[in-house]
Image (spheres, one colour):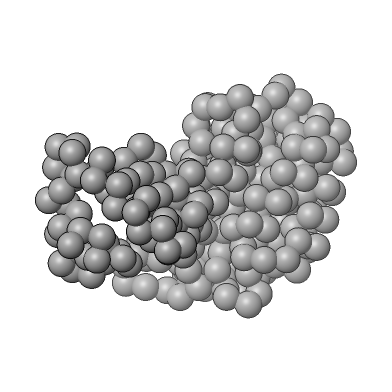
Length: 274
């Protein structure tokens, strides 16, 4: 009833999971990952415990195949499950139970695994695997490209509702929650992958201080701020000052702007407020 991809970036060592489904809020169920440890996808009559228990086994130094074998052996309903595990070194192990709803299956490659069940056709998994393997770029964008290829091949037989991306860092940390660069979820949408792509584009814009993109995609208020900063970047100081003048009329904004200008957090802001 879901399709997903787990993978390791061979250049950065980042680990991630992408998932899409015709199920409400699939991001709260399927994807699991821990910085420097591994990633997991658990679906098809989902048993969430495969996520945390799988990561615990990987953190203890066991190979994904051994961890998965142990978890399946303890599960009386293992043949209804679909699970994939990925180690920090890129080793993968996947299981599609014989009682999973067709079309279903998985395909593993170097540092990744694509899997799905109750799919429109068996070509969905192959399309996902091929897209991940041949798409360049950062891990999150490659995971999204894989999901988009799966959707183009038919995706979930029932339709679409939610999607999620989760990416964690390559190093084990005492506080691993500090190494979660991507955690994006679309819980209910007519076009969950389109909405997920927009969120990823918005996050990249924030990361790169891309005022041109933020002037379009950011929410009301911040959108006006970034429109002013982008106008200043282009040298249109009159338009920039007018945009800020309008923004400063809103309750609380003038103080917020001055605080950030004094801290030097946003380019051009101090000059525009003078």
